[in-house]
Amino acid sequence: MKNAIKIIASLFLLFVFTASVVNAQKWQAPVLSKKKQNPYEASTRNISSGKKIYNINCKSCHGDATMGNMLPLQPVAPSDLGSQAFLIQTDGEIYYKVNKGNGAMPTFEKTLSDEDKWMVITYLRSFDQNKKESKKIVEVKNPEVTDVKLLLDINNENKRILANLTGVTAKGDRVALQGIELSVKVKRNFGYLDISGDDAYTNEKGEVNVQFPEDLPGDREGHVNLLVKVTDDAYYGEVIVDRIASLGIPTNPVNPLDERAMWGTRANAPIWIIFSYVGGVICIWGVIFLVLFQLIQLPKLAKNKE
Amino acid sequence: MKEETSNNSRRKFLKSVGITVGAAGVVSGFSLLGAAKAAAQEPGETVNLLTQDGQLVQVDKNQLRPTVTGPLTELQKRGREGIAGKSFVMVIDLSKCRNARKCMAACQNHHQLRPDQHHINVLQMQDAEHTAPYFMPKPCQHCDNPPCTKVCPVDATFKRQDGIVLIDNERCIGCRFCIAACPYSARIFQWTEPKDAEKYKNLTYNIEANVPQKKGTVSKCLFSADRLRENKLPSCVSSCPNGVYYFGDQNEDAVTNGTTHETVRFSQLIKENAGYTLMPELGTKPRVYYLPPKNRAFEFNGDLLNEENLH
Ligand code: SF4
Ligand code: SF4
Image (cartoon, chains in turn red, brown):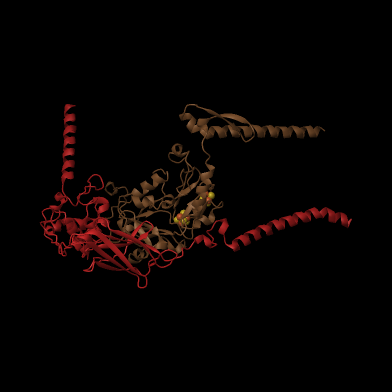
């Protein structure tokens, strides 16, 4: 009996031990893949486009980088991709893992382009305090400004939107802000459709020129709700302008109930169905009544004959 | 003379039967009125009420409940009309589905369904012997030429102006013609008392959620019509952890992903990914589009309820 208990206890311990080993087993990338280098430089542009891709593809599970607000999944919660513990890995290692996926983590081998994946890695690397792999390169230096203004000039004819970003320097001059990414969005029922394209960075005049899609529907009059903002709030806080513009294609919503159809309820059944049905009912009852009428007439006829 | 008396007595008899049945109706009506509340509360103040047949009765105040007929018909009216100017469509990206079944759980939660009842079901598909298997969530297709509404003898199931096909459980007589007519097996029948029937019994019937469910009637996917009224995405769409679902208004040519909240052009999404509809040869014109399971985000894991898939 004692033996049996011992055996059970040792088996249990063994089980717990193996389980913990399996859990602790780390997800390792092959040595060769670790050497891969990020071919893209850590420019502000690459970082901000990496952030966009991150927000769409990674954020729903991993949360915001460095915030630790990932989804609490079992048995392994997704890691905070902005944490130093994660960023110890080389670019090649991260690239490998993004490609392959593991368990609940999807593979992005075919769902994201190589460039997109490197952009995300560039973005994540921007949280690396050691900045071993890449340094953040700032191309343009804007002066310190206050009272940042975003002005919109909409050309209805060729459907172009011109946004102009300026700020007031310490000396009191209004100057253009260069190299800042803007997002141009159109409001739709459940979210905003981004139409800014790949290169919505302000030029030396502080301007971004965006082409509104030729075939995007608006309401009955062609009105759409435009929203233009500085993509990254970290620069100047939230800078947003919204505007109703008549850039869309005027669209008259079709009400399927306007048409009489077979699938319609009684109220909009096709006329021919109503007619043939009512006609059929009248005919059948008509015949029955005719026969009954004749039957009633029979005795009378007999009497008359007599 | 004799005949007359017998006639009279028959009439009397009928009258008395009528009165007793009527009275029973009133009594049972009252007991129904406050059964739930009376059990929970102490008897308090009483009020004098005039019944329909002119009798004065004293009723416990606790037993009085607001009438439900007003809001009920109002809900049913707007539920039948739908949301003006919209034309809802759904896009399901099969390359991202890994059978997490979160959509099913959210749906069952929303519509008072037991775990074995499905408005949306994730199926394991294999089209032919040598083709690759994949997972396919299948809700009601909200057909633009729905065979189900054609066969309903009592106008209980209908299509609205925003394209959604609904069922009025208050009208449905449970003939199940529509189940037979639907080629996508999208409809279910409530054979028994629905889940949590006790809990939901005092709720006003909402035609846009089919809640409370009714025994002996038909129920199916509603595109979460009640949530759409608040500009919220359907339950299944917003609960998917893997970005499978897009939902939006076709009139705006935009659909929004429930997981990433990215909004994309509907026409482009369908065009670039060769989107298709189920069984187009039937001419039912579904409003649910599928993107083929190519370039998958997950390897297919054949086991339907594989532990690893369930997140
Ligand atoms: S899928 Fe079935 S239930 Fe849904 S609209 Fe089409 S025929 Fe009707
Ligand atoms: S089961 Fe209900 S909804 Fe379906 S056809 Fe019969 S009455 Fe209509």
